[in-house]
Length: 311
Image (cartoon, rainbow, N blue to C red; front, side, top):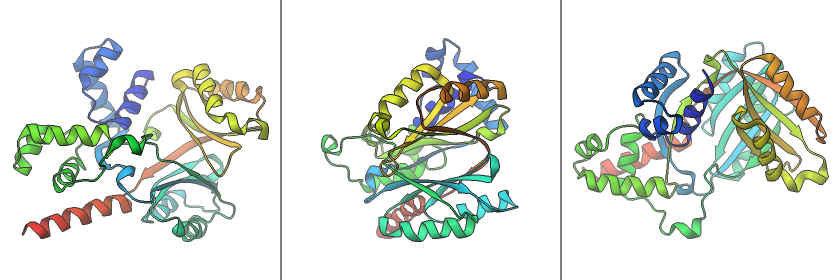
């Protein structure tokens, strides 16, 4: 994979219905070349599927949780599966030194304690660091107006659940409504963040290095987290894939870097170490997996409810 492949992957994670023509214009390549790149990533297992899920804004009391800690397990592969079996957990990733990163989303903060207990016991993790961060979809609810979903909205999301690039004409045939109606509903869902169109992405299938870098800030810098992230993005450009900051951990930033070689990663580490941060810890990602969660079950229950009412 090269920089273009990583960029395509990130854009597909943000909206997996993005037309390949748009990528072609962006990279000044042919549509066929883009198609071949995506096809190659699918064949390598880097992209597992194109999916759609309910947007966090449609779910009451939605909270994203990001936790990590060193596990005592001697069977990391099995441990990933066991942790991922919890209904609130949607991604588990193993990093170097048997460090595990766990992504979860809650529909009730009262469930947080039981989730933490489960992760510690199942993952054999004595010391677990837990960060609470807001939804990745940044929308002003006041500007959205009505964020409720109609029966047709749920049915459209269901049609796209395991094939988010499904043509509108196919959706209209399946649901027995016009393409104009499907397009109008889908545009509203996308524009208002009521649907998440993404991919299951497995960069561990590539030969490149992906790393989560834990940056601990001096307390005096904790209010400058966003500015610090923006400055790092200017400095390292496309080498930064993701970043996280947490309301309950004001001095911590976690940034995901991709590099072609270990030497390149070492150079990035040296640059970060030379700054005024309290400390920098690089952890190389080894394996990970996405899992279905309560959000998927919620959609399934809604669809069953609609079908029952229609019968």
